[in-house]
Image (cartoon, rainbow, N blue to C red; front, top):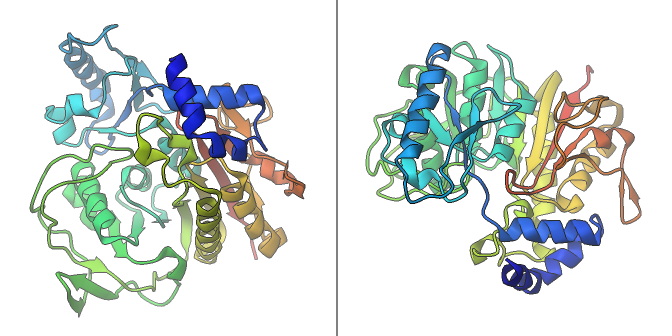
Length: 400
């Protein structure tokens, strides 16, 4: 491990210097350690396919499968998540989604591998049954399916994605985890730039299918092409031939939303793995600045799509204040008394303190910049063996 840390310190020197404005030398050492060690895999059981009464037997089936992985040591076991009643970790870091790709519980969509950190934003947004929700940057789809579970058959979830390839991955994830009758009633796919979405009458629009255009309502079709699983991150990359589908390309999203999730593109500082150059070779202060500009545009537009009294969650898997507190502060500066950063429920917030040692409050200041007092209601997640680094802020559009 010492050689790995030395390698990481050399490779990530500019990043560590960048983050020294918010972390002590000891915290930077802990950060480097987190970047240099494998992280435990986690999964959740999908409530649309696993009835509550079947949860114990389903977990037992998973535990039985883990016992067949004889080459792993120590023997892996499932560990219940303390804040999500359907989420679990696997105790041995050598076990991941690859060990379940052909297991019936995975292929049938009853379980989904997703990092604990990435489960937090939908839990904090907490949409209610029957509500209308927008997932502005939806791929690869794990968070989207959490939102579908929350709103139920009487709700509506608009999942938007700007990239066609990522849209395909999003559709594959939703089709695996959400029953067809629920998808047809609840889910609407949109292919477009979240910065350009706007409210307007109706929810019809312009559609694209195989390069052809037409008008009508989006309809899910039977899956075509490869059925290979998405295996990286919150759903991951997909392989195979892209299925022919119809995606709504209209900017108009109809009436305002009860809740909006902006899980924004970011520099990914919270998910760095020293053994995987893809996770960090793109990083530079200039890239952080570029992402920050995009994030501000997404967040500002998301606010305009929210109904008075509605809630908006902004999240990233990065650590830089430039992509987190500074982005939220721009929204606060523009709308002032018409928006607030909400206090989070335990273990993510509350008067009694945060529930886990690697959870902390949002920053009040950075490099001479003062943030509004309620910024401390935001959540920062420090990466470790259990969690990726994350930032989450829940905002409410006050009545106007």
